Length: 174
Image (cartoon, rainbow, N blue to C red; front, side, top):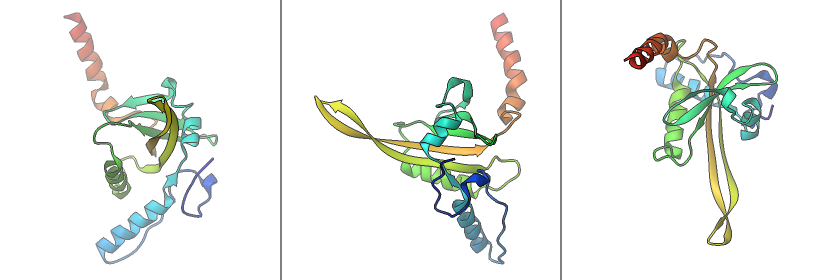
């Protein structure tokens, strides 16, 4: 697995961060220490790896879609499953600052009822293209967030799934 991580952690160890805790009497210091530990343990994955584990972001691996991105099921050679959220490019509001805020907020979350961020990808490539009959290199930035995979589907599916199907059936009947 290609992992570009600033830490010396074993890339074969999987994506899920190791459970470790910091003890400190100062809650702000403890929170900062916890954030630093999580940042160091977050897997920085390459687009190549994400394309491999999602079958090049194929429709058959698509498990959801929202305003800011599409979610795919990723399966490593080891069998480990993750949810891979490929954020849309060129949407107003999905700039670097928003990605940074979302990433940091997700890293701060630590609750057993919320899926954890286990990895990310932030890569910029230059793609050749023609502009006014001249070759230029356009910058393309890929922003991806990787989460624990929920085998039983999303909370939305469990809360609204049956009611939505019933509602759709009712509307079609009318």
